[in-house]
Image 1 (cartoon, rainbow, N blue to C red):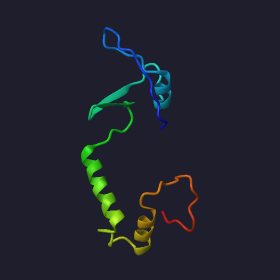
Image 2: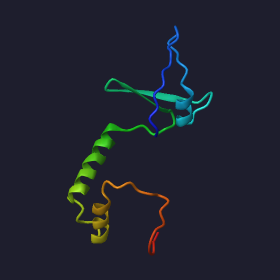
Image 3: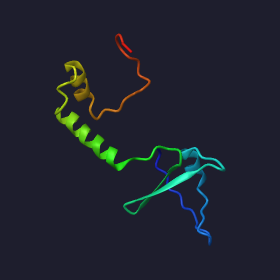
Image 4: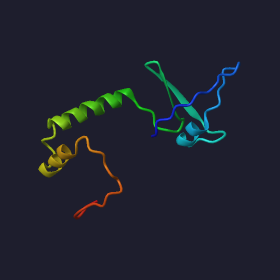
Length: 105
C-alpha cells in the first residue's frame, strides 16, 4: 500500500471528510464503511469489511514463523518441503508465478 499523508479538518460535530486519495486506496465510495483502530497512539483506518488482525493469532503465527526460520519443529514435514520452507523464509510469494512440475490436488 502506498505511503500517503493527508490532512482532514474536524468539524464542530466531530466529523471529517476522508481525503480522496485515502478513499481510493481503500476502495470505499459513498455509503462505504471504514473502521478505526487505535494502536499505540496511532489511528489505523481500514475498510470495515477488511480482515482485522487478531492479536492472539498474530502472536501464534509469529512464533510459528520464528520456529520455521530457525528450522525447529518442522521435522514431521517431508524433507523436500522443509528445505523449501527454509529456503523461502522471508521471501515474498508471487501467487501468479507458474508452478514447476506435477501438482497433485
